[in-house]
Image (tube, rainbow, N blue to C red; front, side, top):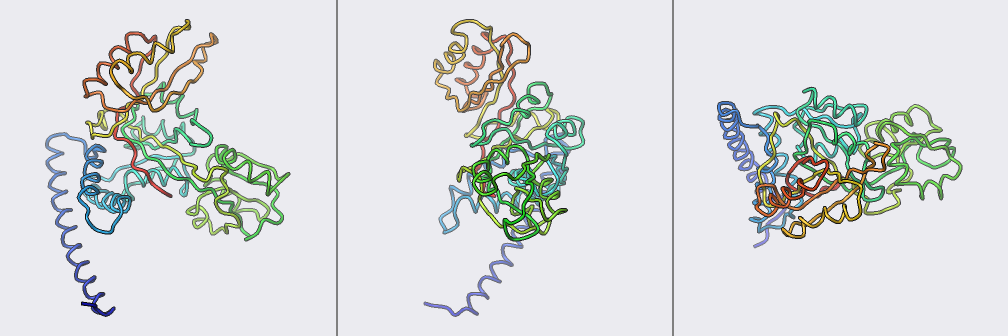
Length: 364
């Protein structure tokens, strides 16, 4: 039986009222949970719990809503409910409008207290000093590889990784006017300039390229001079009232950036296993033949999959390296625990950077 538009809107209004009542009911229960957590001294935020709730909702869905849409909806519901317990302060590379800010919201939801920082170093410092509960930093890009500064800081910090998120990153050329004429300089983060170098060479040959502390800062600078342009997100363009004469200028159409969520162990200990987890560690071995091969043996023997292997100079002047490794699984699993134990015995340096639920993919 067909219904006219008026009848359908009445149905939607009625459903909206039911949803509102249920969400407020959920919020009240969340407030009770918060009181219990206070008495127990339990962490207010648990990424493993968030991952399990979203996976359960996605698995139970029988309707037309897609999994990523359900994930976004439930993340915001949980974020708003958590804010009733305790508002989370999250540090990220600022100013407002950066991809790092989008990553923070993609992981925690929008009901957070934003703490923009001028550099990745500052994100680490503020989080370690307690100025923020959590920090969000870029660690890897699908086009340009690892973000070396983040890896270097992870090596010598008391902070550990408790989560990750991945964004599809679209770069746009933004400026005050809606054309490409008369551009004398382009400002953006060095990673963004590198990710768009082919487009810049083909379309803006001879135009100066200047590094900024972030893409949003590059957008701010471009907003002060009609002869300047920036490379940034659509959010940054809207924030500074800029035009986008060229969109999607990244050289790789599938350009993604992976972000790590970091905090002090006192803020949140290692999250419990969610069923789909990642272990990040950094190791070094003696400079001898076969040493790197020996790192892989414990993993093979115990059936642990390695998803990332990166090297960074140890800066000792002896041609020594640190190796950053990501493994599938959680240290509470017997095979992962055994592999890590054996690996530690053969390493000159061994540090677990974190164990956490694997990323839920997000689009900007």
